[in-house]
Length: 153
View (cartoon, rainbow, N blue to C red):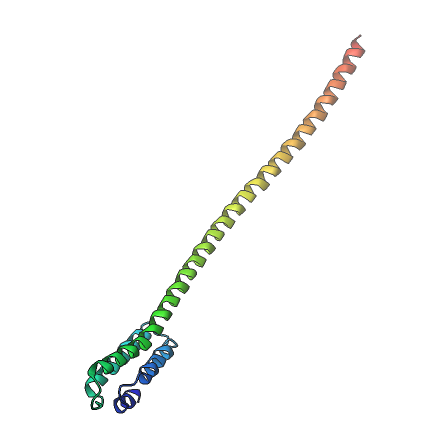
């Protein structure tokens, strides 16, 4: 429909802007190549108007070409902007995923170290209890030895 309208209106930039609107709407499509395909088709249709469109008497051809170049700008600028935006979002997503992986790895490492510390603390408490028990037994043995010495004297 836009192409037919473009054929009957003389050398206007407005239809190229409408083509740009179609390109912007194509970003809603799930296909990632949809905007590129849409922009390419719109560009071909826009440029074909130079050949098939009406010619105004006395208007130089360069004006039509310049008008179409402005139209192509209106078609391709949204594509460039959205592709740049999409790449930035993909880089941000990759950075987020990498950070999540690093956090998970670090959390796993900390959990392993924490388990080792808990085991070491338990071992030290057991060793300390054993040492206290040994000290109590030693003191009892020393008292008995002291008592035996006194009894011998």
